[in-house]
Length: 296
Image (tube, rainbow, N blue to C red; front, side):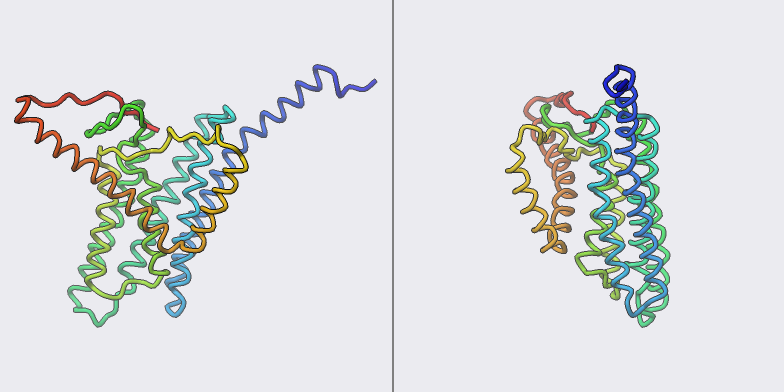
């Protein structure tokens, strides 16, 4: 007798498919971790190969950039397939700590300070390396602190509320901060910093990214964007154009996106502070903060 159509066999088949669906988000998380590990290995490879160090550093930066869509997709897929688990959340946080915390902090240190020439004033060279190492460590601490706050916060409110119909991150997300550092390295094609004033500028960039992660300023999450109603052929055409632009002009596109996103949060905070100061003389009281903020 054929058992393939019995309710018991259909139930077993559905159970196997269900188990497979739980693995799908974890595969993207594993890809995230793999790219982070590859980035760390390429950064270390640059230390033993001065002649070709820029190639290894560039690939380390590219790996971090490529990990960002993996990090975005694992959560979306888990929600779409209704396979969100506590294990998946913890695994995702650990993956982010490696790929967007450890990997970019090492890359920032090696690219920005390790290859400074000895011709620079000896005392200045020593101070730049020491301060650079400390600031890169602070970036790592800020990143893991941002992840911890994200995990324990259920409905955080930024200090500068935005539009009620939009969702925001409280503080700069760690993938965006890591992407800013990686896109900067990729913009220079991995060629390490060799002048003291560029090293000081890089020091400020890394410190700014670390500060924005632990801040309570709002950053747009884009969670309200839905592609489910779009026509598939139009989406394929649009995705093809976007991929071509990203691949053809990756050096300029990625750093442009990183800078725009970074300064959008700074601008939102500055605009909110300016609006509060302008309203205070007119109303004689503090304006009421709207309660329309949401976390991702």
